[in-house]
Image (cartoon, rainbow, N blue to C red; front, side):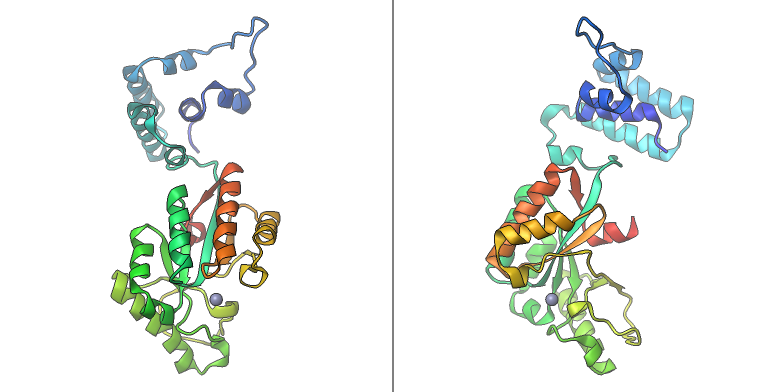
Length: 280
Ligand SMILES: [Zn+2]
């Protein structure tokens, strides 16, 4: 539990007094002047006052490491002035953001993966790409770019076959071959597996330490291929902590993904990669 004063602290930094009014129900008096509080006045002072306040919280109230970290990050933000972007402010220490993860399967695609990456970069959004081994072999530079730009790479098998219909050896080869290809480019073994069609046989034992990742919202973008209908379907169904399934192989998927992202950011969602969704 983060100490309530810290929320006021962050509220001041994130959005000023309106946020405090919403959070704590503070009202303006009949003169239109907002009733002020000692702490609010304190926060209007300079950095020295903020540091003193931080010491009071840490030393006097002893709320532990979470408080300490939050105060430090709040002070850093204050010291950094007003130049921080909205995205940065949405970052560390803000426990109130609703999380959502967007995932792209079947790539990399020579035309649409770069377009998707450009759109994600512009919005400072991180996504998860489940790659096919045979496409990884064709476009290793795109695999490198996905990693360099901070996205998470998962395994989507080698050839997009239904794994449960294959023999154990064949199915495992689909997984391990793709793992090796990705490792050869990025130096990192994928830890997440999305089996094609979401079909994974319980008895398949490939002796790989991987986590299966399915999805909550299937946009069916590969089949619909209509910007408006994809956006409508995704936004109608999405909820907090959902994983959205899309594909980076179609123009309409790129444009729809960007509109979905913009709308969800406006609605207060924060985009995370699937590892953060699963283990947080
Ligand atoms: Zn697929």
